[in-house]
Length: 124
Image (cartoon, rainbow, N blue to C red; front, side, top):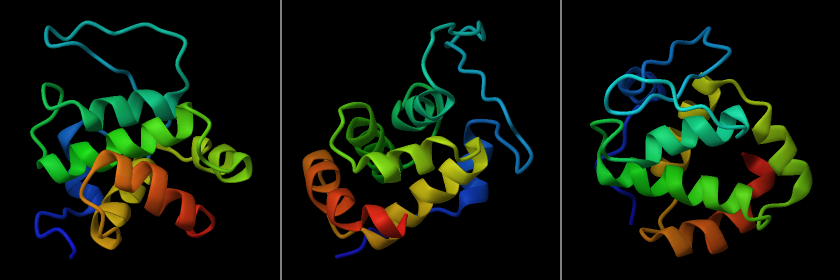
């Protein structure tokens, strides 16, 4: 079963104010203040996509972004694939979330993180 509430990369990126040429993503709180931490940029983008208070996206997108972030920061993903994805631009990360949301039949964070992403990491 593939989710019916998939979105395009452009729609996802627009929700967190990312454009095709965005190089650096700034994560902001609900008041507009920059959240400063030492996280890598991919973690900030995926955090913004996974939080319902940061963007008005369907729950499927939040779930996929959270699962991808969890898989990468917890060391579950193959190291080569993790390093490649970590170098994606913010817009490319939005496109990746859109693609996973469309292609992955799993519906839970665990199913996506520990199952589908582990089996399909080379094609991402």
